[in-house]
Length: 107
Image (tube, rainbow, N blue to C red):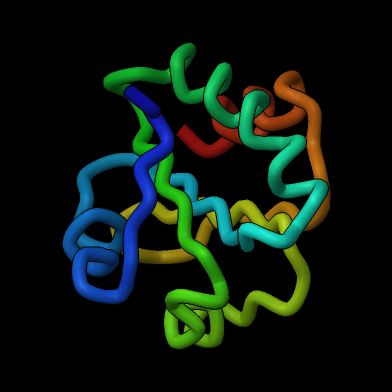
């Protein structure tokens, strides 16, 4: 089972905005090569922070309203939320070490 949960329009607010603690939202698309290559890195980081941070995935083609709400203009885009507010944004493909560093910084 994946620790990076795919969410859509219907459950986004409940799982991301109203969630306790740090939420990392991976904005991506099925056609995005860098997004696909980064997914194993995200999975590994999610394993390390199990119970400490929530990792979600939003497909920008399936949920364009969410992407627009957060000003997503390039993918992959990692948006970090705390208490429903954006606390950090990272754009572009990142190795696991950089993802882990960003999560630790924002916990």
